[in-house]
Length: 466
Ligand SMILES: [Zn+2]
Image (tube, rainbow, N blue to C red; front, side, top):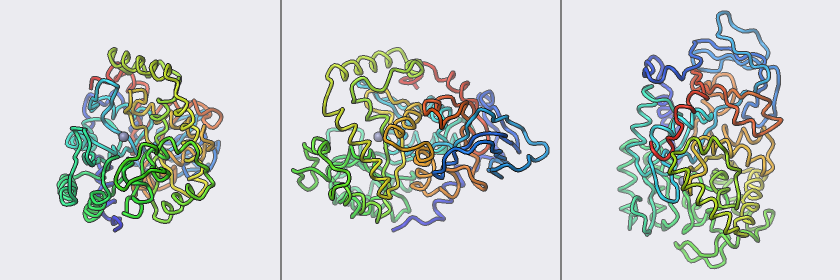
């Protein structure tokens, strides 16, 4: 069953309907631009539709919406921003953007720093895609919508729904009826999506999907016990982690079990071969998009990514130590499998898009703690280039494609007249160097411009604490 447009619109309008409400006093200092009419002049845009960079554009924002894009005249009284030497791209739509964070030693709910880091890095919409504290996320979403906190537009997921596992913070229903009960409860509590996890059985997955769809809610999964092709037949709406969570190619797969060989077989995959192309064909025919989370999987590749000072600065001292210690251990282990898998993961995502698949992205700030909220999304921007996409395609993957999966592409995800003004103003010619994605100056969400540098200063040392 397809989720009706009216339900999507209702969610979205609530998310964007903060106009008229005052910003909390401790937030006003981070607002760089708050005028009813804003014109960004002479700027290079990469608009999110897949098109390449276009120089010399003027973008006019009125009452939070994009009024025009092009070379026309600027309305009288507009707040002017000189865009020379700068690039404007749509706000990123992060599809695997948790509000919690982990290292090898801890898991912390980052209600303070995560929304700030997402927003300051240019992520204007997130789907949390697995929650350990759904009430925290629902509360966070309410306080962002009512301007008591600053952060991205939020699509909250219910608790992880898994099969038999030792995890103590997930829902592990042992029958289809129990799975339906979990979905019904959280649907009525107001979550926007569900996420299933790697040990779920097909019977419970089927029940989750059916019950969620009854409530007009979609389901994504970090799978293993159920293959991608099986999940597509069951009606799943989205699949997380690209190649890394796909057990389609295992030679030892037993129904409803996560096979031991599913990663190892990936290194022999031929992207144009029948096995891979069959997965793609079935996903595409069913309209199932895939979420790329390269920034997190990169961390199991030895000596990657390069250590960034700003990442260390954002961490508390203990978290910094934990991160660097584990990073050294991963480098010392120097796993050939991790290196080979990485190359296949990049190839898989490129081939999926070439086959006509809908690829979006998200950071997944978990693992041993190197992919931070927002910063990891920016790293994704570079890594998708490494996979062979050009800057027009990468911007599209990171904005419009995510909006499509969320069903809000009529409202946001590209720089087009009539859409919400969710925009990132970057100092420099982004198309000439992907690393410039870090040079964010102003992030507009619904036309309100936030001072990225000031927000980042406010979270220093807080990752791992709050
Ligand atoms: Zn995750």
